[in-house]
Length: 455
Image (cartoon, rainbow, N blue to C red; front, side, top):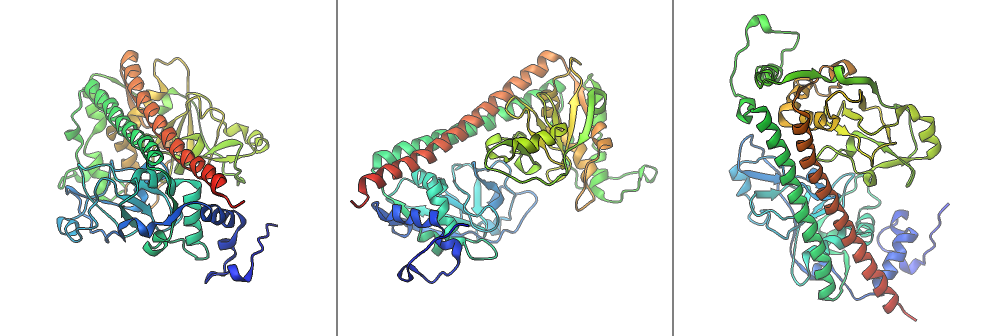
């Protein structure tokens, strides 16, 4: 049992034990020993965004909390809002350097910095906008994302049934003031990380464009139409319009017209099976346990962001172990996302919301190419077709076996894979730089604390 004994004089208006946990009290002593200030002394603007009014097609966007991840901000597919909604609040319009904080729910405290001046975007009412002066915003973002910043967020939100950060809570966050040169050094790491992240996105798009060029397919042929008709004779047991709208695109016919032969996952699969449904206890270290919620936006999983299980449990579940070249297909959540198992993920255990496809070796098909195609806009039409019309649809092994892909020359497959892997490498380097920025902040504070600690 963990005990934390405090004096009556140390009590505030908070009586929940979480607020007085030992690591949080040690943090407070550390910050008290430094030259620190509350964020309120640097704030120009500190407020939540607006309630979004969505619009299917608009140049105006909204950053909702789900797009603020531990890796930063994902601005590639922000939902659209009405023009009047965008003009509703001048202060909620995002500008480069705005620090954005996830304020409600399980991921409260996730923080990023807005980098894109080419998008007309606002923050939603579950995102806090922080504009500051007199402090490097990139250093500040790294501090807030560090262990010390996150512990303060935890302290601010503890004791409530629903974790929630308010602007007043954020204003009270204590920030160690370090020399400008140190702030700039950390800030430059963050800027370099975001630059690599953008370059990774460009490379990923380049791989997709090369795929389309080789297939000679125009994306416009796959645009969903507002109106269409289906003969009565073609009606099935589905009555939802989206099902027939996607079906009307006839993606199979378009692929055949490219001159490529078509294969199904079932034809190249040595084995197809569901993941483990057994309950597991997560640990800080061990064997990665892969879940659909771990999939990132380039359809891979970073082992460092995974949950872990013990070596003993992994041995018990070894029939659900991944091997290099396997494909994992998500059968719920982001339906039909395909994860290619690379060297880093080899030996992981996968959960029940995945279906594992073990490809037959030396079939003239690169499993990674198959994953890239099925994750493309064209490839995903198949899973959208299967998943439409239901609140929650699970893909089955039978459905997975029927997913189709084109057989193109192995050299072209490899070229697409090479560009995609460049994107993944850049993304990994970006995350490493962000981690280094956070750890550098923690080191600066630790050394400063030792130097300034009371004798």
